[in-house]
Length: 506
Image 1 (cartoon, one colour):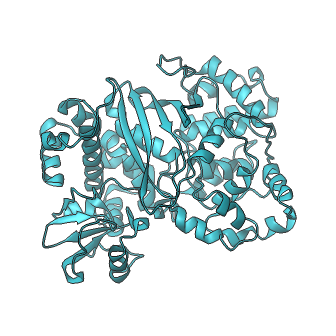
Image 2 (tube, one colour; image 1 turned 30 degrees about the horizontal axis):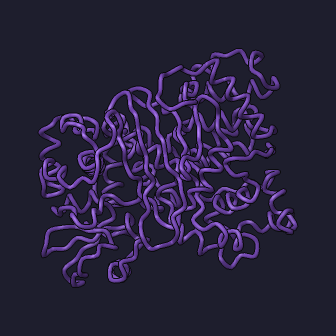
Image 3 (cartoon, helix red, strand yellow; image 1 turned 30 degrees about the vertical axis):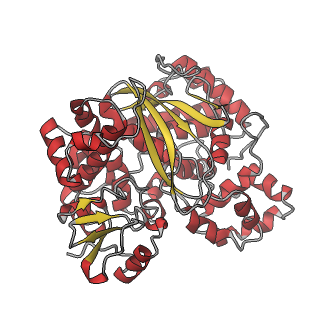
């Protein structure tokens, strides 16, 4: 069976390798027969002859074919494929769950159940699409996590093994030697620095350009007290929040700054503090979702450069990201609370709910005191006791009940159309809410909110007729979520200021 990418032929792959085009890092991998190694397309090594290479759609595919990771370009440490979110096929949805550690926690049966297939059919599908089955894909993810932990922390190798998701130290040692042709001790000798004790510090790869400050401004403007905080220290912007992870609580602190289009991969510094090291994989993946790490900003920006509305905004803020989420249920609940109220008002109400129903935890980051309330906790509340109009209170508890019962799943495993249908079937959940949740919680790159007051205010402020622009918004497909973010970005205050922004629910 061919393992070459379905949507990029070998000649196109080879042209990207010859030009060392970093946009294709993570989209496919180059395996070299003569050396037995596989590389990212941008590897600085001499370009091998065309007849001597094969191309693989995943690192796991290359590893399964017997190739080792290149020590020079570290091909496993790349952003993921943007196709996983653009097409949102079952394979792409499965990859999101594998990256979150679902196979490690629930096995292939649990992964298949979440995606909606039998284990056998899902294995066939992943092998055809990505060149490897779920176990091999999960193994590749564990190997990459282990390498980063070995090279960047002082954790003992046993701790690294279990943090990365391996079931034994022996399995960890064997996998590292096979994938990297080096022992864990040899990998540790390459590290550049040691973080403070009790922390796990990683660098999250993102493609450039990366508008980190604009992302920070958006996150800071929507901060919920107790759960999130942000600031600027010595000129560097940062955002931090609590994490409700499978094995216990944690926190993450991200340094967010702009990275221009230098042709290089940029890195977002992430510092995690975890109650249980087995949650390392899940915590990293959720942080990557939050910063839209797998976006291809060049492809997105190129779509808009000639557009009279969004083009000037792209030139002013290239590499703008769609902020993701660390918990889909939390995003949906916050979206319902924010219906027809200002962002400031929604923050206040949500902060009250966090203080009353969230789990209190101890952290070393000032301002982080609680986990966001679980869907089960919110479902048990009498709607009349909520600090909001009664109809919205009923909508909130109804949504929470559906989430707690599994009637609506926001873990990126379910089909987007099915999730949207389930959401709008709930009382008080209209198209605006369902689509906003799809954009933030499900990573949908092609969402537009035509009734949103912020969109119409932004268009009017730019001197355009909102009605005519909205009517022609299909020209922005398949990246309408990014067009939406560019419009909202014109209204977004910087981290040190505030201003009201409202949204409209149909």
